[in-house]
Length: 226
Image (cartoon, rainbow, N blue to C red):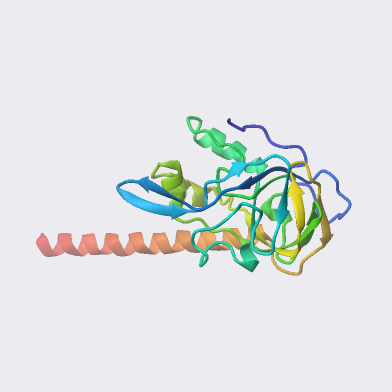
């Protein structure tokens, strides 16, 4: 199933806590599994499947969900991963030959009307009967390439600067597709969008510096050999 339409409510100003057009359109879960790709095994919890009905929200994850590398994903501060449905438009246009079902990027909650520029560290959200606090962006790893069986996904993910965000569970409860997202209180931290761009810009500078060093080395070698 491909998704190529921008959801209604894109760019909504969630400083107004009464906005009602923010919601979850898919709840996705999956347990860690081993994927063989490019001659190597990769254990990952990225592979998720959309689930109907309501799922329990526990302190460390959603019912039936799990993470493989707890040093990078999961735990109290990264219990639930959110990704905006609006971003699927980018992926559908960038890779029209690839199918992107909801949950394709490992998110637990695919949201509508809420993007990274609207989400701040410390925001408290109520979804279903559970309550959450936004903690930090998700930063991609090489396992994305293995999941999609392509060498370009990780690079494109960084280029897109569409990473999504993690949340801690403040109050256990349950969630389901169609639940409204209510901003209970605004956090005092930076926006997720700001943190993402900060990391992306840092990566670009590091890559540029690496290229510069390589170019200088090549130039020195040519002079020595010439």
